[in-house]
Length: 244
Image (cartoon, rainbow, N blue to C red):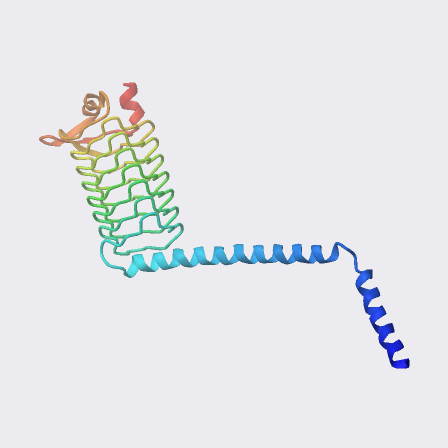
């Protein structure tokens, strides 16, 4: 009988302990655990996204010619001197990417986000950059011969010394762009916005197609270097031509 009483006392104590817990304690603990799991899942996804970006960057550096990097997230990636010949980078995010001396000949960069990208000395011969966002991009000395930049945004872009022979820049936004010493021989600039652009020392030819009536204005303030080839003289501010 004594043993039974002790057992009953212990059971009673346990029952009393269970009854003594606050009703919301279990719910609070579950909510806290769910919040921690959600935070861990978000952190894991962020790490995976970063790893995917790194993997794509590595693939771009060592991958085969014509690598498919369509819509890839390569923001802030260092692709210096990478071989991206004929690569598919349509819609890719290359914001602030470093692509100094990168080979992008024949690459498809249409609709790509290239804000503040560093393409100094990059090879973009025959590349497609239609509708690409190149606001404040650094294209100093880049080779854009035969490149297609139809409707591209090049606002305040640095195009100093860029080779843009035969480039298609129809309807391109070149507002405030610096084209000093650029070669626009036979380039198509019809309907392009050249307001506030710097055209000092720009080379152009009888085959260069200027927007509106700029052709005659450009000829008035350029000197002919050889038959059919002119170079802009003076400050080169594009507004000077349109205001003249």
